[in-house]
Length: 233
Length: 360
Image 1: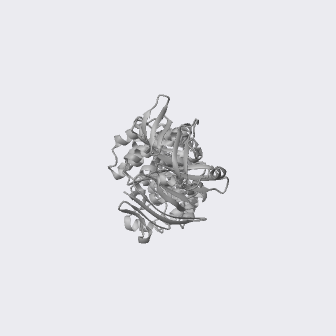
Image 2: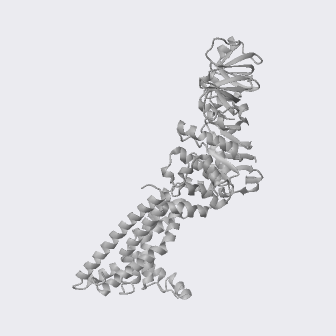
């Protein structure tokens, strides 16, 4: 594949894989926490959290990207402190692309994991409590293993979504080759120049292959886990 | 060790207000559905927080709302066997059994519990591959191995068919006689209570209608109606004397010999408790002759309770044990059955089912 793609195209593919990987890994703990809170808790602000999590799904991606820029730009509400205190800059960096991808993929991840939480019978967790397990042990030894197929599905979905994220990414971190030019940004860039169709098509093929691969992988993994832990399937 | 329970809790349209002690052995919480049995057990386990209450197990205070003390479930050392086994589907039988030990350590010897419950061959399987009866036995083992100070059982047999029930009841009898922890056993089945209970607490509409030793409570004619007339029956204790050639077993009860159909576990010398349904008892003023029924027990009427309908519940003392007989008011009047009258109770051998006979 390396010689089939030009170095520039390969760079975009590698960057997208890296961005999507980190976006998925970093958002996973937050995704599990959010899904748990939404599935199992009712608290003031529940609706607010639910809305906030789902917002990127409904907002135009360019708006999400713009909001990220306002919040995490060098002089943004949060970005200025990140820079002043930690020297961290997100805007126009690949790390910013990770943030944009994570935010955009978050709703899909949370939905999948939340469904898994809702499918776990709280009676099993009660039983674990009567056997001496504290709430956090119940979560680690009963709840988490039982939601594992949902977590995997959510992670793979989020990864696939991150691979395809375009609008928020280009708004927040622009389209800098080697730094923030992800797969979709590269396709977009190639389509803007005469004679770029061929390169764009190759990247489209990669895009489709990665997306299909991710979906098949998630299905296979979820089934394997389900069989191993003895829940349906 | 004794478990003391005092609870008050309000639900919409239902108020629970109970207090009772559960000594060692099996204390059966008996009552119709909706009488508050499961609520009591859940409060003991800590799965429900009552408005007011105090629960003490041995010396340990599990709940004292007056003092603002509420132990969370995982710190109560309570083993809970639920109606549905609630085994962890992602763990093997062995891992399920050992689950409580991760947190509490110690507990009954693994091999001993596995052997007592006959689940040695299942250890490598997952719950999905078990039958209902096997699951329930594993659930009992799992609770036992968590080293509980009290064992709670909420209708552990209700979801099972008669065959499975008959398979598990002997294990529960062994548990009662061997485990040494108080068992709070929720049931709405009188035969089950008659077989297992040492103490019976009768709940009705969220209140304790009566609490006492099993023979005493089941032999009380006043409780027959609330407990279910057709199911009402008293418990006699009898010792196996000998097996006879025609498939019968001769037992010796306080009131005299009894002949019952031979069943498992009826070795000579074994003490059995025999439940005799009140409606299967025939009363006669004279010792009947030329009768096919084999068991004729002389007794004295100790109480008569006329029903609202055509029936009457008669309590006899047969050799000092209480025996209930359900007859018509017409017969009771015609025979002159009143307190102090001498009568003979006639019980057909075949009317006593195997499920009515338990280890004493």
